[in-house]
Image 1 (cartoon, rainbow, N blue to C red):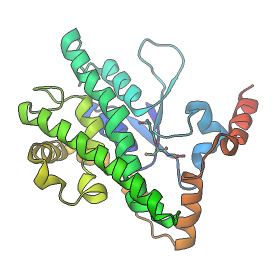
Image 2 (tube, rainbow, N blue to C red):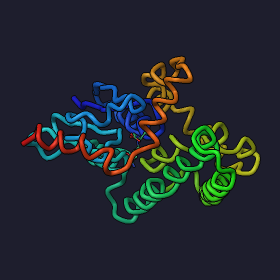
Image 3 (cartoon, protein in one colour):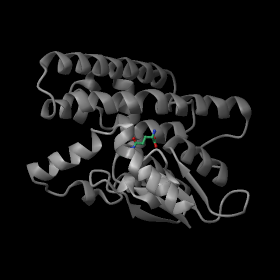
Image 4 (cartoon, rainbow, N blue to C red):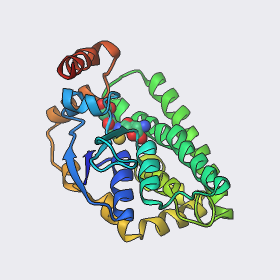
Length: 254
Ligand SMILES: N[C@@H](CCC(=O)N[C@@H](CS)C(=O)NCC(=O)O)C(=O)O
């Protein structure tokens, strides 16, 4: 049994999609990131970066005591190695998949996160028009560039890493399926190969199941006051703000 520490966001869906694709048994634990649950001592012991998703595999690959992992890319690579699925063993094919997996982790995810922040949230937090314009242009422009990279790759290949569906597709799809909603409502007309792939991957039953795990948690109606309190937790994190939680976690585990 695998324990999954989760909230319904793109990074969370990556893990539930992979678990569904592999047919692995799992148990979901809510980490309400807008409510600050990522700072709880128990969670920080599993995920010291105070971010979900994370997992504990109670019957880990290689045996031994339960294995805790954070970072969605590492989790999918691990689950692929555990099951022998969606990450080839043959070196050339394996590193081709991993190169696109790391591409997602370092590029599409963070840039879409920042573009979404400037387009949809920053105006609720800062008044300075110049800051808003610069941040939006910088990150939306970078997302546009990354869409071009994916579109070219998917024009020549059925999937991101070639002919076979892999963890690289699951990692990138979870973000790419939100491009139109969050970043650019004209994206699909500009990038038809990307659209073809988003639709094809999105039609997979395991992808639909994984993406919908506890969807209702993110659909709750919140008051403006509640939204504001959640933004304060999510968008105002500096080392000194998270230090207390980290120290408490360290004390609790010593
Ligand atoms: N690179 C990490 C990113 C994880 C991440 O940013 N998770 C967000 C939700 S999508 C989170 O937990 N945020 C909590 C916070 O900002 O405190 C991964 O892919 O696992």
